[in-house]
Image 1: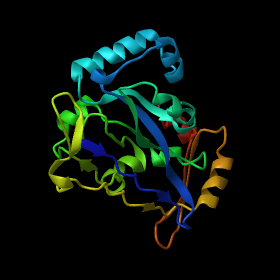
Image 2: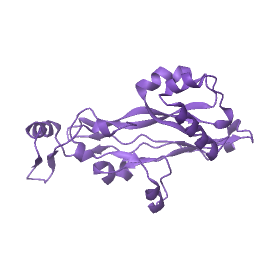
Image 3: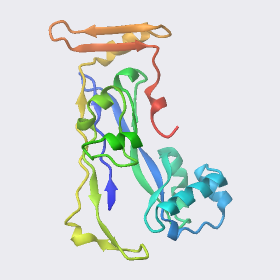
Image 4: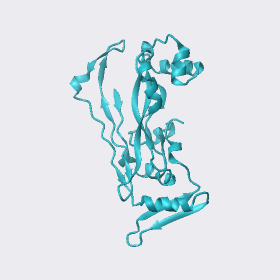
Amino acid sequence: EIIEYPYRGLVFDRNDELLVYNSPIYDIMVIPKEVNIRDTTVFCEMLDISKEELITKFAKARRYSRIKPSKFVKQIPNEVFARIQDKLIDYPGFYSKARTKRSYPNEGLANVFGYIGEVSYNYLRRDTSKYYRSGDFLGITGLESQYEKELRGKRGVKFKMVNVSGIEKGSFKGGSMDALAIPGDNLRLSIDLKTQKYAERLMKNKIGSVVAIEPSSGEILAFVSGPSYDPNLLSGRD
């Protein structure tokens, strides 16, 4: 079973200005039985890990399965992956798997959006929907959490046949059980980006909050809570 992750829904302001989008990141997967690393020093430098981390990660992967893939290094940024993707083919047993992270063209609205993170073991135990699996991401706070079901989309899946040695033998039942990933719904806010930026300038280096509301409808045009932070700092591996 190979999971295909959907694109998370985008977020726009009331005038269709883009506020949140997805950027590509990559997980490096490993199949222990196929691994052959000739030079561990070069390999570790390529992935920016220590030899101790290499030994620990590989041992963990082997405990999980010698023939099934598992994550070796998570969430490698696109610009880093661009430098190593051609070198990865020299290391049998390792391959890349594309994922996405949240990115923000503006530094504001961090307290409104909230952030996404990897699902915890405790959450999986409490999840009555049984939708999430280990390694999945979900909204932790803010709008990402409130509209999680709408934004997350629907996972896709492919079933491959492999022999006892882990060698792929084609799709299972001609792909009749496969399902495409469905992207999440986009979210359009009542926030007006220009008004929001103006309120954020007023609150820079200050403690407090500003809320601007359209009286006729009750729609929130600006929402600032200070101090705030750049939401890009809470996105991705680091």
